[in-house]
Length: 370
Image 1 (cartoon, rainbow, N blue to C red):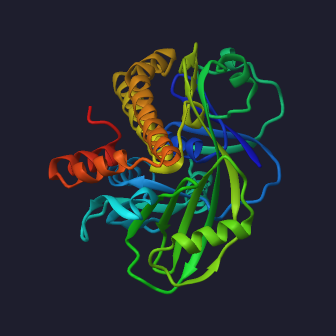
Image 2: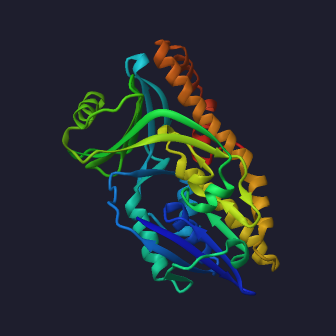
């Protein structure tokens, strides 16, 4: 496993760092070097097994931002034009149908491919430098600004332990299914008796599967059987290795401490049922990008005022959006337990209204309506 620290040098010898090695850190680092900010990577190396079944969904507006302000990802994404949602409570009837057959609505990308393209660009960028770091750092004195995206870092344990946490009592299982060639442009989510199951196309021959199982662990054989049972359209050839991880949610109570700003999954973590986790981070990068560029244009330093500006802009939006995702999860969970069809029928009814359908689509693309 890699633990990276990105150190940013701005004119007047200002120094900023990013703690963390994931996609959130890499995407933020790339947006910084694009603003001609010098980034040094300080890292310690540990071995890890890459999970090549993990995928992320990126909304249309976020793909456009990523292409323009971070890096062009057109060659590695697979564009979808529809999202269909079904429920066991209505005998697998369709609840919601987003999009149409022509417009780009959402894209799916493999995590490791996105990480690879970001690393390749950063490691060859003149504003980016890699250094193996071992000595002790005084973050309050050595740097003007710190972005902390490392959940296990000592800074997190010291300053960012106050949070609203949620245990979903669920385990997410991820894999890739190989199938016969089809026109594979529609993502499908089914609220099953065991939990939400998503089929996310990544090519005409492959589809990513994310199954969030409630309460009890399942064997690989049981997961394979469930995938076969709920498969609505694919002629399966192979189911790849299955990975699993426990699901939990959180919202940080305070976004910053002095010159240290929390970032990425440390700020917010939500249930994967809506595929919005990384989209929230991209929206955060959008705001940071605007705040930083505005300070650069005005000749102002990147100091702790950036942290307060970011928190004032994003904290309430992130909390409302996260709470909305949790509410959807709880409603379907309650309906499943009580074997009640009221919520499903209500959603099915309102989705037939063009105005409501457009609102659902806009929220899925942009997060909130304000």
